[in-house]
Image (cartoon, rainbow, N blue to C red; front, side):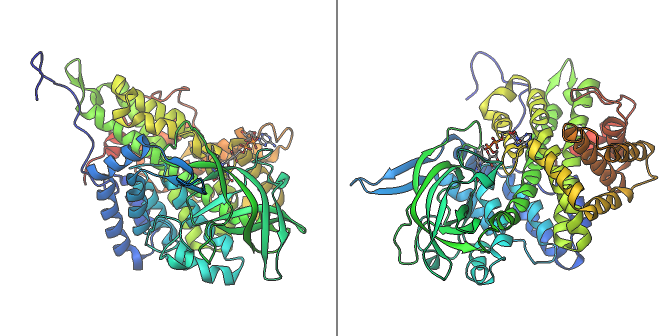
Length: 545
Ligand SMILES: Cc1cc2nc3c(=O)[nH]c(=O)nc-3n(C[C@H](O)[C@H](O)[C@H](O)COP(=O)(O)OP(=O)(O)OC[C@H]3O[C@@H](n4cnc5c(N)ncnc54)[C@H](O)[C@@H]3O)c2cc1C
């Protein structure tokens, strides 16, 4: 009903009922570029369906409900028996059901599987980011499980299933399962070698009993977890199910759920193991190597998840400024706001193009691409996730006061933004990991240089930046203290080289001028005014195409 006191004008219509995939030219072009011809048509159809679902009023409602109704711990049943269950809002299950149904836990070993999944993850998690966590861990557990072929045969079909079944039951009775991960303990998250959880051998068949704790264990209602514990032979990876094959509950005491800044739809638990049954994955003492297979894949999802947050933030900002008028004209036409929006669009496109390129390298799975990923994943995880928070904060400001209000969805994006930089190894850890790869794996640097070299000669600012990067790489003096600077430079050179090769000239030009040529201030919205900023913004506008 219209208010009697005034007429509501100049408020922006909601960004709803659009195809999140098709409207994102940077993403849809990247998918077409990297998908092999054969599965391409079917994958594009599926991504279009997912894109329309993600942009629907229904998915947006699920996102708001899941975030607004955080999960609740039910430690005991009404009779006082421990049940250690977490109750989620129905919208959480709808979101997960749709995502699993769309194959977002399945990528390994299919032609173009990683590109298709990364694009789907980037599209669907724009509706709600929190449920991306169990999707990511389930997808990423596959390569770790494959170190034990018998376990992989048993579990992989369930992990990659398109059926989502909520509730704790014996895995054998389910058509699909979710996986979590337990590495971080109170005394150390980065330093996982300091793990104090002990594993006592139970049988020659690789069964153990675990005693100890995990300080962070997200998605605790998952069916099973890959967990690190100290076996007699050293740190070892274990598969720990919540329900045993005979239907009894494995001891898994959820002490508390964390009260988190964001990621509120998801539960992150503190758990304790007390004689908890687990199966060894891989050899005793090789647990770090095994579980790092999982961590590497989740790090790529941190990049993709941040690209999703940035894209949604840029889309909301550009949409708002298209409709909001000030001083007689739409905000999008004001030169200074156009500069801000173009800067946001650039950061978003650079993140998207890089995320899909990394996924394509996973698909190719050649020696050269594996070497490239060894440096490119930590460098991208460092840089893209670190750019996410200031970028989303700036996008929020484009909506003015409305952006600060929960209903706009922008505060949810901003609360989520820092997380991808923290988990799976925080910023410094990624930068140090790049140094480790540089020191120990010369083929990784060669592959990285080959990749950025493909764009050599196309833009003088990129050429100069590559030269500068090589000079920094050659100078080992104080390298640990300089690691962030070096990795930032490597990541921006990589993004610049990808955009020069594949993006429209106005996007590549703007990126090279501002991020590589140094013609930019510290805040967003400080691009050189001579660039074709209107074209950069128009390309990123979230409209059906
Ligand atoms: C919401 C949420 C959910 C999570 N879910 C899970 C989960 O499901 N499973 C799981 O295992 N973990 C989970 N984690 C834990 C997460 O992976 C860790 O918090 C993260 O790896 C950092 O470890 P930490 O907290 O122990 O910090 P620390 O290891 O104490 O690190 C603190 C800081 O020191 C820096 N640092 C570390 N080493 C160095 C160094 N050598 N030089 C310079 N700087 C350094 C780090 O970059 C970081 O900024 C979750 C965390 C959050 C916030």
